[in-house]
Length: 328
Ligand code: SF4
Image (cartoon, rainbow, N blue to C red; front, side, top):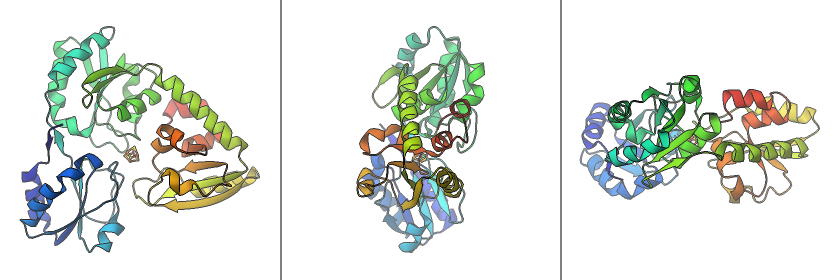
């Protein structure tokens, strides 16, 4: 990984915005660069405080944390803009400067049966997308970028909770190529029916995601059944402003109609230890990041479902309807 923080852009934007004090949010992989970033900001006579909280995505925005430390701007590194809120945020997308050519070449044998490929990239590779398209076109592939839908910021851009851009082009492509990491390709594999190939830039390999969809969907069906059978249900909401997937009011009435006891639980970030003592709860509905129940279910003692899955368990949507729009 060769990360480019776009120092010049950071300096230009900060000079324009003129904050007195900033709260900087860094994804885990970039926290090691905090001192370097602090130096750039402090050289502009701006005070800086780093958030020690996690920043998994552009969803992890906390204006309250900024206000608590007296910051008048949040500088969020590593993700594209995700939500609009009434607090100033400077998103610094960060480029990963790699030579992707050898890896793209390796991908060709995995794509030999496909003529039309749908491409999505994680934000660190946006600056390479023209080269990537040219590469595949030279290999006589027709390339279509996934659509700019919902919370994604650019055509072709992928985030872990929004796959409608891939679904929008699914009928026009033979397969999908994801330039990024396993997290994004796994979400794609669950969301679309066409084959998904991961160009895994972090492990320097190509991975066919065959079989992932069937395996995960089977597991999801089991969790949905657990909610149907549950007597005591906990609905979890996170305080992160970008992680509001579904509304509790809607679910509470339906759960009560079905003779279930319901409690609402709020927290800054969902982790297994925080649920341990809610031992009377049979199943949790997670209104935070939908990838937690899907990807991390094995880390939790009790079953968990997403908002969409809860709608299926409560008979408000059919499983087929959810599959059609995408389970994430
Ligand atoms: S909600 Fe989850 S998948 Fe979506 S951006 Fe945030 S961390 Fe990523």
